[in-house]
Length: 627
Image 1 (spheres, one colour):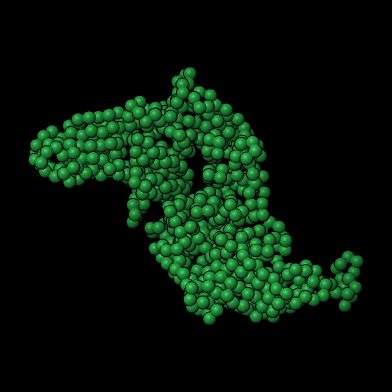
Image 2 (image 1 turned 30 degrees about the vertical axis):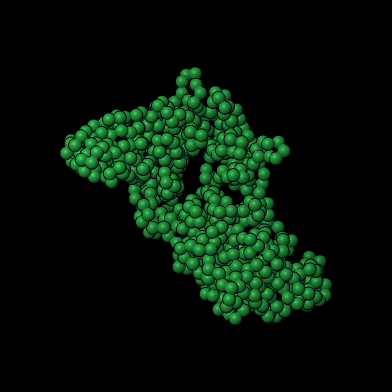
């Protein structure tokens, strides 16, 4: 009699007894991910830039330039830095090392921006000029806290003087209400090719930024005009070049020919603190489009995070309750009320808004944390909570500094084991397939750029590219997979098995130890799946890229080749009631398996396993026996 698992689609089931979980499930695993019917060894990680000093990153974000290029921002200690492609450069300095900061993107006719807010201040970063942040804090117009921009308005919470208040800014109208046009601004003297200086707009207000910049002058060939790329570069119709810093107004332009006429500049500028996304003011009788403040005082605990639901409303999740704010279409009325009690977060980053709904780890009952989604009901069309992944024991982990991210088909949860002081695990949650896997990496938060996943570390001021390559910083990836407690058909009978069979794909450099446990007596190694063995096919190899668990698994900057294998291990077992398989990668390289089999299982008597049998004549109190 044979017992075969032909595919693996269930992930980790660690809540119920290992004997009754699905036959293709793992009762415990680390470093394997369930994908397309296989259990795949997760890819490795490598540093992006140098290894930083000991500490925890407290902010991480992905902004965009107008051409779609990403701008990586990370708070390392007392500074927010940006990655210039080869090194980290200072953006904002002089911050408290332990303070958490929030970032939010905003794109308007005025350009592409990242707004940053936290206990130490409020800034606007023009993504084309990240080294020149604009301090937009104004105690008469705005606040320090955490922020989100949605539909042209900033939502702010966690204000130091009002932890239970939700604030809104003016709606940015993107017109002459907030934009000022400048034409014909005089630039320098005539008779030169190169001009440097600062546009006049900045002298009227430090919070201003420019956009749509142009320069022109008469030259020998004719009127030479520079146009703005939106990336901080200027190009003329005659081949002249230049640069503009939208945040400071500093320019450097070189005409193709010596100028013979007046050199002038034209542009527009904005101040987001005047009826824009950093202006939270409102009239005594509030008008549409102005700022607002809504109290959300239930329980007295602070608002931890605000997310946009599938219905367009704003859900403020606290420690023990959640609020829902729905603003009328005319922006004059609103419905602000308690959405649910007995619902809450352990940390403000422990949630994420996705196209499926709002996901968060619900720790209102701290002894039984639940993965919960706020999603639109198909029946009532209202947003309702639903528990996800009921088969996974989220209580095995701590979430006091957790954050959520996304990568390909997974929602990622950065958390820690109880014996660790910092985040050292990533829960990989696949809503569609209803699976959870666990990756062995540290991390505070992450951003995705195409196939690349960047993680800001929880133990150092460093950023890693993870799920990339075939080693963990030149070490073997820490991984194991433990299958269910297999009863092989008859739970009361004792059995023996003669062979174990495995099928999958692997790199020739990889080797994987095979272990068995009989009736809980401890794992013993019984063999090795060896990449260089003859049972690994010499044909049918496939090149695989370093980001092989995402959709773009073939190709990539680092490639390896894997080959199909189908092998068996002869074993000799004692009589057992339950047998458990364990696989442990021991070297470098790709590995997966898509089939396991207990071959030629022999059935014996209906008895307890030998290790559990009592001696004869046990006393009534069970403490002594008659030898």
